[in-house]
Image 1 (cartoon, protein in one colour):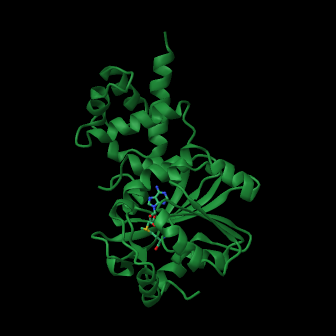
Image 2: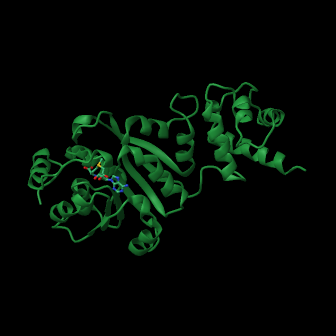
Image 3: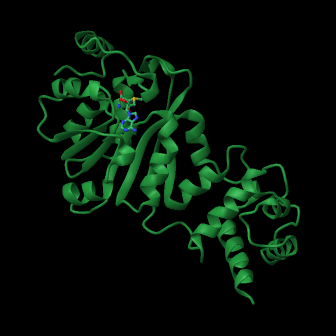
Length: 291
Ligand code: SAM
């Protein structure tokens, strides 16, 4: 089958099947072989690997994955794309196509069946509106994941990679960095897709930490503290946390915790590192346990 990374081959397939793009599924197909090669290299795909691809579209990246991986499972929600995928991937014996919403797939079972429960590589050019639920779902459900290499909206990639003090730093940065090391691999302009999206995109690789980056006593409380700190970004941390019904501490207790951490009483959440958020939540947890 012809390389779908070449625009003329993608156009030929779309015409052959009279394919209508579905906006609701965020369908923007990649048509740039250089970007496809970069994704394969960044994901470090080898013939040892089992790869889960989310949203294969007409199978463009899937072709590249099949060439480089041991085995590929591609999960596509749009049933109109299934006959097309059967055609474009006809030459490959190492691919399985599943017609399903990825949010409904038991990925733990898939990793067990296809990779003996060993960490899998995930590659995706995702519809932008489901980027965060998919990534956080993969991390939080403790699916064995080695890395996730994904195309996302440029701003989302920047937020995932941002550190303290940056305007992009927030709850998403901390949630991602708790589980993984993010690295932006490439910026991808709209003309690399068909149809062209309205926004710029970026490929980001998230390599999962073997052990979470910090070990808070109460992980759930740490994330509550993080969310509350950024809900009211312009407020001081003391006021932001005090205003949140999710935080079980008085203003005095929060101020005492900041003092114990050696932080300025007027500090804002955006100045704290993940380590500091973990320690802050530990102090609040300890205060809570004092009768
Ligand atoms: N990977 C292809 C490429 O790079 O050309 C297509 C990328 S397109 C941005 C996103 C793909 O994800 C579409 O084929 C869309 O139908 C599919 N998709 C959208 N929501 C999905 C979901 N919840 N589960 C699985 N696939 C989904």
